[in-house]
Structure formats: C-alpha cells, structure tokens
Length: 500
Image (cartoon, rainbow, N blue to C red):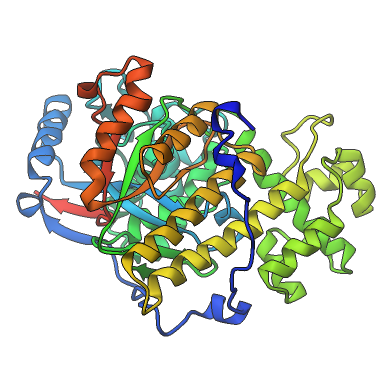
C-alpha cells in the first residue's frame, strides 16, 4: 500500500453483502435486460456521411501519397474504458465497459504483389513491409512493436478466411488517437482493426460477436493471455449506454447509466505496455492455478479446469460462497511451483503444460488467495453495478453514490489484492476523490495508465480544473497541456467500415 493513498484505504475493501443471482440466471440472461441481437455484422457507412469524414480524408490522402492509389475502404475501431470488472474477463466473468470516442482508423486496399505494406500517420512509427504469405507462420510473441499488433490481427483473420478467398497482399495506412500504454485499449483497437480490414478485404463477413472473439484470439499471438473484453466492446459498443459483456458465449446487454453521470478519464502519466512484461500473464496463471487447486481439493479433475468460473460452476456455489472457499483452501500468502505440484500431485512438466506456467522461472512465487479473492469479489461488484442501474425507486443521487463506492472498492482491491496499481495511479485516485469525485479506479490492465472517475454533469468543469491543479500542475503539466490526458467521455459506437 502506498503512503500517498493511505486515506483512501481507510475504507473497508468490501462488506460483501452483495446479492448474487444464481448461476443459471447469470449465464442464461435476465429478460428484464435488453440484449444485443446476435448475428448482426459491422455497419458499413458512406465515408462522406461519417462524422469522421475529415479524418478519413486525411488518412486517405496519406494512403494515396504512400501507395499511389486510392484506398478501397476504411475501418474504424474505438478504444474503451472499463467502468468496473477488472482482470476478471479471462476468468470467465462479466465486465462493464463502454466504447470511447478515441479510435484507430485504417485505410485498406489489396495488392497482387504478395506483400503487406504498412504506413502510419505518426512519424514516430516507421513504415513496415513483409511477405504476406509468411504472416501465418510468423511468431510475434514478446515483441510489442506497433506493426506486430497489426500482424497479429492479420494472422488471426487468416485463420478464419477460407482458402481461395485470402488476399494475395495488402496495403494499409494506420492512424490512431487512443493514447498508447494508457489502459484504454489502443493495442486491442489496432489488432481488431487489422482483423476487420483483412476480413472485409476477403469479403468474409461475420457477426460482431464473432469478430470480437476472433480479435481476442488474434491478440494472443502477441503473447498476452487476454480474456476478450477489449475486443468485444470494440465491436459491440453503442452510443448512449455502457455494456455488460458476458463470455462463453460472448453477448452484450445494455447498461443505461444515470442521466447526470459523467465518467472522466485521467492519465496517471505512468505508462505500461502489458505485452512488455510478464506481470499480466502471471496474474492469468495465478488465477488458473487457484481454480485448479480448489478443484483438486473438492474432488474434481483439476486439469480440466481453466478458469475460476469453471470451478464455481462445477461446485454450484455463488460468489460469496466461493470467496469463503478461497479463504479456507488457499491459506498461504504465496506458493512455490514445488508446493503447487505437491498439492496437485503432478509433475512440473505437466503443470507447465496445463497451467500457463512454462514462461516463469522455477523460483517464481504465486499469490493465489489474493488473486482469486479479487476475482470473485470484483465479479460481485459488476453484478451490483448493473443492478443499481436497473432498480426503480432510487434517485440519481443514491445511484451515483453507490456506483462510486463500488468503483473505489474496486481500486482498493486492484491495488492491495491484485497488486496491479502504481504509486502515481493511487495518487491520482486519491486526488480525484479529494476534488469531489464520487468514485475512482484504475482502468485497464494497470501498472500505470488511466483512472476512470465518476462525477456529475454540473460538476464536470469544476472537477476538471481542480484535478488539473492538484495532480497535473504539481507534475509540471500546464492546464493547456492536459488535452488527451484528462477528458470527460461518454458511451460511443463500436467498429464500422466506411466506403469512399
């Protein structure tokens, strides 16, 4: 716990009296929620009718200058901010993000010379080209250069496109305004844009749900074992409402927020690329091992369990009961690989095969109890967050107070239990609360990046000015320099294809 955020942590982490619906209702859906219709493809719109027409013209001109031809079409994929439900999508639990205005644009055309040629409007990103036919057999694991995210998207799309319909080559110009390494899903937007561009170039049309799933698989080629939230909201985002995203199967439900609610995104100035370290994948492995040990100690076939939601379903317990099981059965502060193997009655070689541990040194400690507790408690917060927005008879003021409290609880858990915050993020969250925020939490993978802050429409101007002074000015950032670092946001539309 950081001293700079000590007052924040005076609050209890979670009283955990949240009501949970039974598992069948959670998995099958509640008819009182409005669910997206499955099978709908990505929208195709005339470029000149888009509110992005000016930017599309700019990227089109760049494409033409580089490749001496006009693009055939454009794709747009937004970034996202997750309101609540962090680090639980890869454990199988629902999350509550919304698409944001910031996005990645790609201008695309085919070529018959067997090459993939990439250019980026940002001069700091060098042009790139490679043999298109080699992409499917190439490895991008552990190399988070900008073009590799695009290549992962192309590779993921090629996995889905039937033989005979795959393009011979591709030209693409990229332009994004999602701040990189900020927790707003810039990398996933780029991967998803590459998937969408390659699929459309091949006239291979799939539903939004399928596109989210394909893009999630594609991004794993970069080496991170993500759960699919970022790609899902990239395609399923909708103006006017956040989304409750469920997995296996992927589907989305509207979450209509209080009318006076405004979410502000604030950058901590600490940047972190989750593909550049093992921190993210370690958390994924810790959650899998926690699920497997719980399964083993309850007489289940542990090596058939991949996610915490799997063991919950097999035991037929609610989230509160699962938290109790974690407290009883994962009683050590940390576990060595040797202790894990002993508990599971298996070999290190087999553990590496089924538990995502092969990339870690044998001396790596694993914090299983803390990670599993966060996941089960955070999953309960997501349920409560959704239900607050559904309840009748509550004033906006009551709803906002409750939503803000859940967000702040989430941040405390992410810092203390999941250990994925950062001193500057903690300071930013505390400063935001002292500036009058109703709630604040890190958003995205963490270890830097952005916080998402809840306030009200009438207080937005005052809040922004106060936080500029309290957090940014003290770090040498002038009020005029906070554009892109501090801004209010609202739910925006998901991916689209634009035709010139």
